[in-house]
Image (cartoon, rainbow, N blue to C red; front, side, top):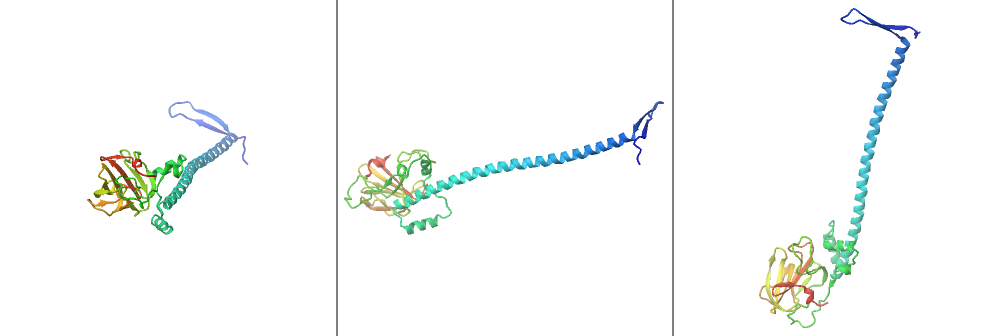
Length: 278
């Protein structure tokens, strides 16, 4: 049995000197101090481990919170893109209908464009976000009646039936200057009619307009037809109003099948709507 009342005498003898020091410590105090130090060490170790664990959990929670915020942002963007794609799909279907495509032709085009995001009309989406309707944004060129007289040298006939995607003098993305004609979207291969009688003065390739035809109407007026997929006339050919001169395409600097149509007075482009019928 331990005698807690017994003391331990500690003697201190300096290396140099003739005086010694001594003091007594109760054995119980030594054991108590040892127990206290042991408990303190265990508590310190426990607190260190807990602190590291809590710190790791806090860092993980913060990382998860940031990841959740990113995921929520991405989910909102995905939902917004789905809505935009739905609008573009409806607009695309409307375009098919206006272009007079059959159900079989529509399915064939959809098969060719599978897994590809529609990008036919980059301006359309911004206008829809502003609250405009299809009719407000993209009027339709419909005057294709060629049953009347074909002797007019004034370009009053719409060259193709389709959807107007860009107007004259409009600022278009990626262009250094204003648009010098009207763009009419339709299915690739749609016949292009001459807006008036005249003589073909150009039938060639242009870096921007692709396959292009220019018809001189011999009264200071001329018309230009760009982005064609195929040209059916040659320079010097006489042309009647309403005659098929080319097929609509997507050549040159073009993001989707359409006709770039210009009317020029003395070689200077003017608004085609000043001549074209309703």
